[in-house]
Image 1 (tube, rainbow, N blue to C red):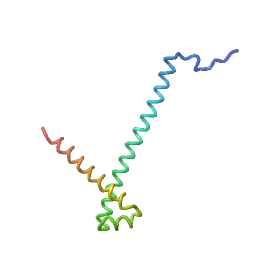
Image 2: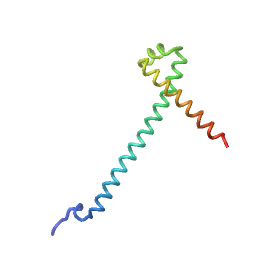
Image 3: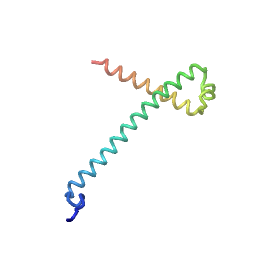
Image 4: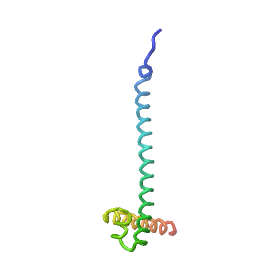
Length: 96
């Protein structure tokens, strides 16, 4: 009795289709992970903004959060950009 390798029984087209399916699956997984990262960063940006408000300034928030002032500023810009983007979406949705 001879056992054939399943790769040899598939046509070249089928092997390529299977390879493409796996590649698309990986791309889909990466895309979903990137969406989760962006969402987490946006939530962190909101939290950092609130911390700056609570502590009074970027330097105090930096010390309290054990985060560099540059990181604080990056998250503040991100929150600002997010708010500006949300405003543009709301404006566009309200226009006829």
